[in-house]
Length: 233
Image (cartoon, one colour):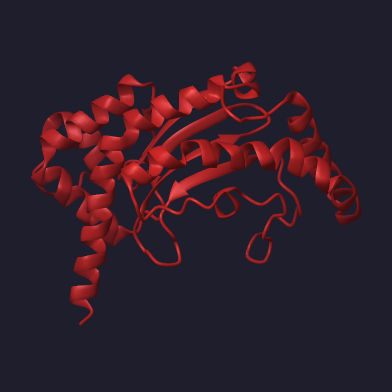
């Protein structure tokens, strides 16, 4: 048994109600309940997966307070001025303040589904250029990493360029090679799973299947950091 309170229909209803009201007084009145029903279980997930994540990457941020999304939206640079969101997520990644290029894994709960996956946090052109180099230089490693992810039910969702990118790439890897970004996502509408320990086991198994891909993308990210820093000297 895990120390996990579960994410209940009541939690989802409260998040939806808070977004519907879009009111600071309403939020302040229900803040403690929102934290108890929605924020706390997500932080518990961070704690329960922290040992696995530390083994995967010892530089990963594993402070649950920093890993879980805020309920209050940052509207400063958004056309959408709604104050609150009705979804919540947790991210497993290095500090985005310390690293420009980095992969991340996540678990998110929305009103319609929950999902987990892996992506490049910032799919900047230079990073994607290095990503393609890594595929060209290590096709077998990338192929095995993709196979592990897809066997576990994760689906590649990278948007393709209109024209194929130049470079050496095996035919079976071109869909990944010619993408503007890199993300593998698994979604489910079986909300009963997130209400108890089953989601912990599901995430542990899923992230284990994603770990080869995380290592591959991490190496590409570190290489991009090094090459960009060297080129700026």
